[in-house]
Amino acid sequence: MNRRDFFERIGVIGLTPFLVSAAGTVSCGREEKFKGKGMNLRYEVKRIFLKHTWTISRGSSDYKDNVIVYLEKDRITGIGEAAPNTRYNETTESTIKVIEKAKELFKEIDPWKYYDAGMEIKNLCDGQTAAKAALDIALMDWIGKALEVPLFKMWGLDPHKTPITSFSIGIDTPEVVAQKTKEAEPYPILKVKVGRENDEEIIRAVRSVTDKPIRVDANEGWKDKEIAIKKIEWLVKQGVEFIEQPMPAEMLEETKWLKERVEVPIIADEAVKTAADIPKLAEVYDGINIKLMKAGGLQEAHRMITLAKTLGMKVMMGCMIETSVGISAAAQLSPLIDYADLDGNLLIKNDPFTGVKVEKGKLILNDKPGIGVEKV
Ligand code: MG
Image (cartoon, rainbow, N blue to C red; front, side, top):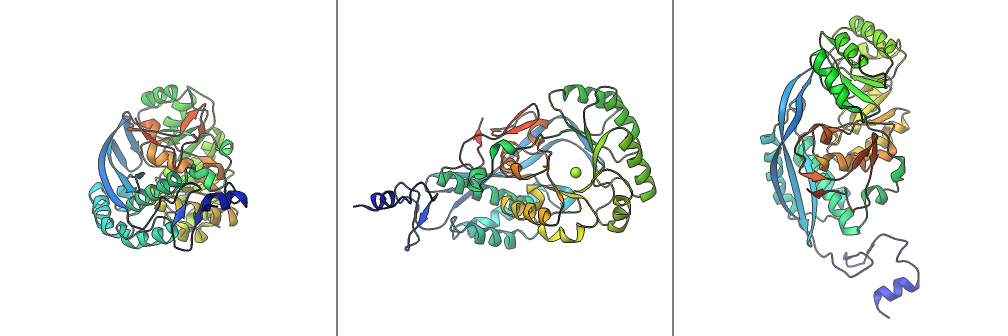
């Protein structure tokens, strides 16, 4: 009797996704095809163009240079993405520097020990979390592909429990905001960027077109708690569902003061990057916005969801301006969350990849392995 026959006879195959022999060789229920360690790492910079100039309280952009990472081993390629953000001292160049440095590390990495690998990547990245996210997403995509299962399945999640994603409306003139709101017709929930002087004008422009639920993101734009509370009280009357990052991340006392006085949830975004930030926020915010690019990938995001839920906080997943690689990766965890704002790929003109779909706002996961992404 050969090895496979033996496992089939005792009913092991089918119950366990894979088996690791005493020799450390991984069998995927087929042949022993995964041997040794070391992964080949390469990357390319993709310039992605926005459909509309993207303006938030910090600034504007027409395009982003994201870094797509490929991790190859045993003829399987995991794909990841970095969307560096200047708010976190990241540029395309600083991201590439880390990825170049990681090439040596990956020559020694055993992907099946992906927990340990994640910790080694973290040490190497030194706070450059977009680069870390790209490497971790690619690693986890490789694992899913090697096991031939989507990551949501590997984590035991129900793909039907994905939430409806909001669609983001950036800051603009009232005319353009009204136009963008009309273009967002297929999406049942909007997330509106505010945080400058014309907040009321922007919300009125949205409300002139639609009465659908809106969520508001001030991106740290309100610097005074008295101004912030007046803004929020007015926004509540306009049917706003929650407020994201009303005040600067470091203004914890002021934000707690706000939270105790307003009727809608206050969600942390810029105030939270990784799981280590969450405990001190539990009394200050009602929930957190997790982004793979801040967390440094899927493994840390998974830990953050668990911790935030344990502390009784609402969990949202958001994104930067990303292709379908970053968005489809985040969507794998979305059956666990309360709110989704995973629309980065919907805001761009030239997505080089296809993956998670959106139907009437609902995230639709496919059954392809890993993060479920293919090149267009
Ligand atoms: Mg935000």
